[in-house]
Length: 262
Image 1 (cartoon, rainbow, N blue to C red):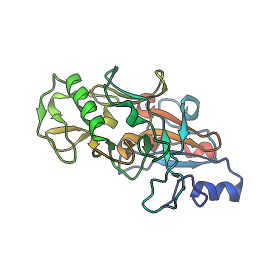
Image 2 (cartoon, helix red, strand yellow):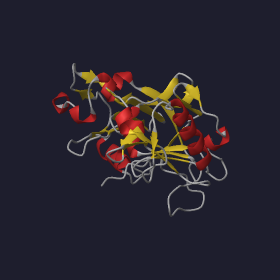
Image 3 (cartoon, rainbow, N blue to C red):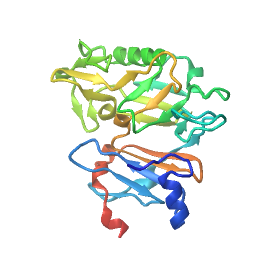
Image 4 (tube, helix red, strand yellow):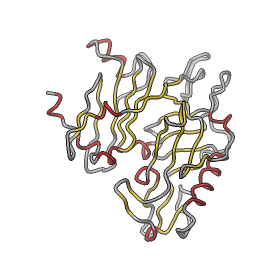
């Protein structure tokens, strides 16, 4: 187990100090338990095998990494800032349409540290503050109204008849979900492979869960939404680079070309 937070005793800080590496790492989680993903300390290139060798570092979209003024750790000192990774989600779109929600919940309160969006490999699925969850699931259900609903399977609250959803190269053929960042063109697009999960033989469920009415962080992007995405955490430049789904480029996190680094 390796701690990847931005604190001074994190793995990244220790390696940067010992070997003079850039304060940068990249993470690529596999969607399969039968294959490995990869983590890279230092800079790219990040070359993947596929129909053609792909350097994923050349196609990243960047957004600023934010710092919450209040620690989100279970135990912390007064005045200690969070060492977790926050990004500035401004709005959410479903099937290209903006979801009506309380946008103030998406900002981090400078005094309390409440609100905002962070990235987590601990939470298996993205957690949304209750009113955001209700708005997103309502918009998603409306956009997929032609597919019959089935009883929800815990911990999910919105499930569909799996037999009525087509398969595509990027997973189940369902509406896309966009996390809109610093501009309308800068968005983290979530396709069916990352937005849905097969919860039973009949149920295909939206892989977002209700995070409660008063969570510390309004949006927590979980592990399922990170799978088959290359994420580059550049602490030196305080930015996150992300690829969106590598399956669009006909490769996966398990296809890293290790020979390219020799």
